[in-house]
Image (cartoon, rainbow, N blue to C red; front, top):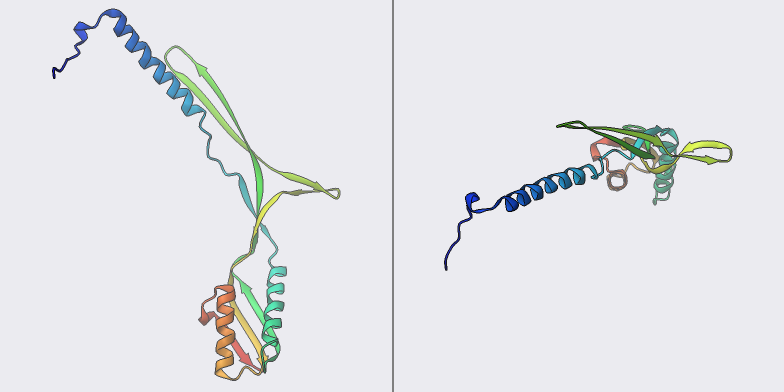
Length: 176
C-alpha cells in the first residue's frame, strides 16, 4: 500500500482558502457554543428558623417513649442543639449577557441576579421554602424513676443514640 504525503505546495489556493474558512467557522461556532452553556449559580439560599419548637417537640417525644418503657415513669428530657433549624428557599436566577465586538477583540459582559421566590398567602408574603433542615442534637439529659437498673439505662442510651445520632458519651440518664 502506498502512502501519500500531503504537501502545502501541492494544494491549490482554493483548497487552502477552504481549509482556513473551515477553521474560522469551527472557532466561531465553538465560541458561541461556550456562551450558551449555563452559568452555575446557586438557586437556593438558606435562612435560619427558630429551633426552640423543634427541641421542645423532640423532648416531648423522648419523654413519651421513655415513660412507655416497663418500670420507668416521670421521665423528663432536655435536648441541646448544635445550631438552629434552617429553611432552604427557592431563588430565580437571571443571567444577562452583552457582547461587543471591535476590530480584533470581543468583549462579553455577564451579570447574574437572583431574586427570592415569594408566595402570597393569606395577605402576607413569605419566601417559597424548598426544604427544612432540622438541627443536629448536641446532647441529651434524661431524669426518670425506675432507671437505676444498668440494663434499662443502657437501653435508653442506645435508643437515644440511634434516634438522634449522638455519641453515647453525650447522653446522661439519672434516676430520681
